[in-house]
Length: 524
Image 1: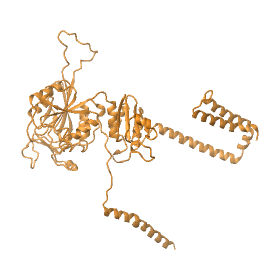
Image 2 (image 1 turned 120 degrees about the vertical axis):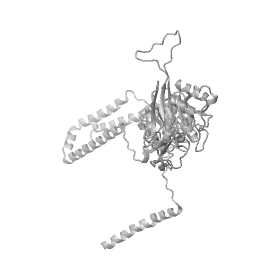
Image 3 (image 1 turned 30 degrees about the horizontal axis):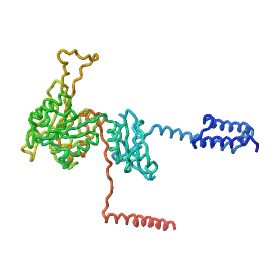
Image 4 (image 1 turned 180 degrees about the vertical axis):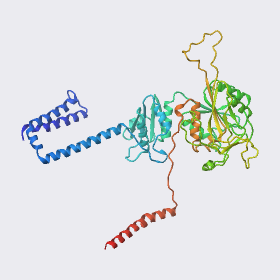
């Protein structure tokens, strides 16, 4: 051994020692890279001084084969490293679960795409080493958005940070964006996305539910109530409140959307005037008008006609048999046809109505009003006009055949406001006109589809929330929302459990024993 053979061990000591020194919080003179370059130089110098011995070593046959094997293994490792690097930068996943349980919903993707700044999600939960559904769900958010940062905190490891965030239970997720903060303790996609909507929304929007004429109540938790609709709106970060039309000569300014949910009595002139003025000033109205089985509402029907929305004096019946899937009869039409509109864009889920009348866009042309149909029944339906004889209804030649429109939408543009007398006109850019307020009206021939009984059936909840979102000008919320995963638990009776135990403990093992004995007997 010659003295220069110590150059390579010295290089290793220099490289490892310099890194350890820096990681311990101390500083070395000069740049950290200098020490690594110096170590590499010592190795090269050692190789040059031992050049003749290395050449003789590599000229041997076994060394050549070993070198070829080493180079091949090194090439395979390099290829695997490159593939892994490309896969890490271009993530692609396939969800093969039923109902796409591990894929983010359309609404979540829209919310993430609309993030203008960085959103921070701090997840507090104990790291037990076992599977954590919340952590798995948040990884999907990380993969879907580059400007979303997720921090995982074990409260036992960082009690100070846990105290700063005022965490009292785990798991808890804290969502922060633009100085706003929301906490959720149930880390499902629905709750996480709703928290993101809450912190990214600019200002508050209120949905006002009219009352006083027998409308559905947002406090009613029975089958006919709207408490579930209220809860869904509040989860989407809308405020809800009641509105007494007869006590309000003018709709309050804080009402972003007014909902008229199936009034049992016709509206009186003051309420009609208030709604007319509200829409003319750019207000947004959702009107649900029930069939005239208990009484007529000519004033409300006439108000809808002013916006070119025609409510038929009929009851839509559907004999396609689709309603039987949901345990319903012909008086509960199922709609799966949606003329193109922003509310129903990419909407591919059926909606279920009950005792609905037809509501369609009128054929007449009204200045400043644009109306179109929104949702239609199947071809095997018709609009029954004989409401007094519904025991064995049959379609008559004069009655409208399917598809029947159950809802329509209208945009109402008032003339641009004129300047006061004597005032100089406000200059506008060339080619542009003065902006006029745009009112929006959506009318349905049924209110049952949004009640507690029907809201969670098929696409009813998404359809209702999409309608409110369009009226409130929240286009980013118009989509298919996250659904809770289905519960696929298997429940067995005590007798079934005994049979399964016998099958697992005796029948199957005994079968293998018999097969083994038969095989041994044949080979004997």
